[in-house]
Image 1: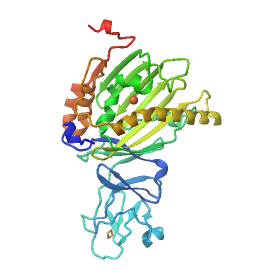
Image 2: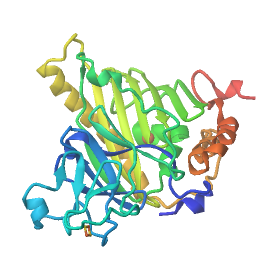
Image 3: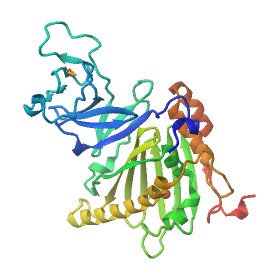
Image 4: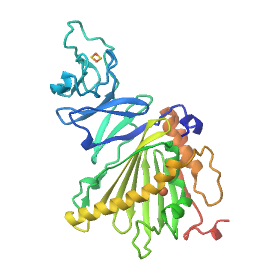
Length: 359
Ligand code: FES
Ligand SMILES: [Fe+2]
């Protein structure tokens, strides 16, 4: 798959932003190795329950801090102590700030360079998110609140792990403007309206159409409000057969390869969701996952599209690509891309914006 440089996105290989790295239930006191942004990292939970992420390799002699089952450090349950993680090789221990806080056999002061890189981590709605920033700055926007996740009338999602996709995330972001794929891929017939809103770090697609998979058989219309908060977290509020909120997260593993998750919150008709509502929500999440799998299959098999061949009726791909550049460039330049993208674009060829009115 093509690389970031081929799309001409900017100075950095990976975008700045909040990104999912795991489901909460994967992160325990037993450290795990993960790979994102072309770096091997470890994820673990300290004894307080708080989760941490740091560079995988010990500065002493390069040992992987998580991938070990046989060292007595691991077997004696001293791999995680308090909030710190101990290297399985010679037992150096690192705190959640990445600094070595114990070298068990050396009386000498701990060298300043004995530290590993860490990244800010937040846990919300059953997901663990990292703030990735090539400039190592603090977050410049907030994680979404996912308020419905804790609302008793909503059935909390179960995370679908969709695995790796060998596709540059640019091609996934393009979907936000892709009005013309909705009918052939998803069966979204009878399009009523299609609009994109660009607002700083948020991009939105608002559409009303039929949907062969998710709307009821009677041919009802679905209203979808779909938005990215930054470059890696998509939510979609669907007013269809059942009100629901979809989550799709994709995080770069290497340049041109992403890891992808999907989940769906479903509102029950009751004040407190019961067992039947949970069963129905699981079914509905599966329909939603299958609808997303239609995009996934296209992305997994296509060649890179560096320059879309645009015709009348295509959505504003060029604007999406300008918007996306803000995350691949130093933050002092982000505003320039936001200013160029901000605004609302209606794509014509719908019931509310027919071609006849387009001239
Ligand atoms: S390599 Fe980690 S303590 Fe020696
Ligand atoms: Fe799609």
